[in-house]
Length: 504
Ligand code: 6LW
Image (cartoon, rainbow, N blue to C red):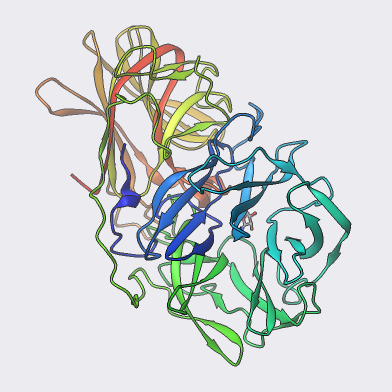
C-alpha cells in the first residue's frame, strides 16, 4: 500500500494530506501523534516518529465497529473531531468527540499505541468539542473543552466531578476559542488554545496560571502563532499541541493549509500537520518560523523506506491508511471473495449518497496519479477523487462496456465524458494536471484528468476537470481530497491500486 508517510519529507507539512488537529506525546525516544478523521472509518489515524519529521502510520485508534458508531447518514465533516493523545501512568489515553447524534465525548486507552485500544468510555457529563486530558500531581484528571471550560473526570469510568466551569475565553473579541491543551511546565500550568476559526483567521494563543483550573493570565504577545492577513504559503495555522523532546527542546505540531492557484487560493489537501520549533522567553513559548522548508532539527533526520506505490490486495488485511465511509462491513468490502482482488459491493447508488461504498486514501501530494485495474463484469464502479458527497469527480466502468466521468459540484451533476470499453478488466486513471486558464489571476489549483489505459500502455483521456471545485474554499468542511475506489451498482473487483506522487 502506498505509504508516503514512510518517506522523509523534504518540507513541511510533516504529515501531508488531510491530517488536521494533531495531538502529540512523547514516551522516551518515541513520539506518537493522532489526527481527526470525521466521517471515515477506521477513525483517528495514529502515527509514530523518532525525529518529529518522519511519521509512519502504525494504526487507527478506533478500528472496530464496537468502538466507533458513525451512522450511515453521517454527513461529510461529521463524526470524529479533534483528539487529544497523552501518556500517563504507563498507558496511552486518547479522548475525542464523535459529533454523531447520541455519541459525544469518549475516552479509550492502550498499552501499545499500535493497538488494540480499549472499548470507549463515554463522558455524558462533558459536553463540547476538542476535549483535552491532563493530570495534576495529585492524580486528578482535568478535561478541558472548547469554549473554554473544564471539569475533573475519572477517565477510566467516565464519571465527572461537578459541572464544567469556564476557565478562559481567549482574546476578547476573537472567534472560536477552541482546541485547548493544558500542560504543567515548570512552575506554571499553561492553557494553549486556537482562536479565530479554522479558516484564514486561525491562530494559537496561550495563558498560564498556578493551578490546572486557573485563574489564567493571557500571554502578552498573543497570538503566539498566526499567519492571518499575510501572503505566507502556509495559511489557517492553528489547532496546535506542544511536546518536549528528550534533549529538552520544545516543538509545536499544528494544522495549516497550502492554498494553491491565484487569488484567493484554494487548498485541496485539507488541513495538514506541520512542525515548528518553540523556544521560551520570560516563561512564555515563542514559536519559530513556520515555512515550507523544515525547521533545522537538532538531531539527524534518518531516511526512511521509499513509499510502496501499489497495493495489489494480496493481503487479507488492508493497510491502515485505507479509509471507508462510516464502516467497512465485509459484505461490502472484502479481499476474501476473490484471491488477490478487492471486492466492493454497492450500497448507496452513487458518490452523492453518504452511504456509498467507497475505499480511499488521502491525496497527500499536490501532484499525483492514481491507477486501478478494475473488473466491472458484475457491476459499475471506479476511481474517484472525493471531497464530500456534494463535491467529487470520478471515472467509472459499467458492466455495459462504457467508461464515463461523472462530476458533482454542489447541486450540479453531470457526465463530463464517455468512452466505449473493450470487454474485460480495465485500467482507469486520474492524475493532476495544470490548472485551466493559467493566464487568469483566479487560476484554480489544478485540474483532474481522467482516462482509460489501453493495452499498449497509452492513456485515452475521457475528461479534464477544474480542480478548484474539489477544494475546501468551494466545498467548505473540515476534510480534504480522498482518492479511491467505489461501487455504484452490483460488485466491482479491483486487482490493484497505484498512488504515484508527483507528475509523470
Ligand atoms: C476542531 C476545531 C478545529 O474541532 O476544527 O481547527 C474542528 N480547529 O478545533 C474540526 O477539526
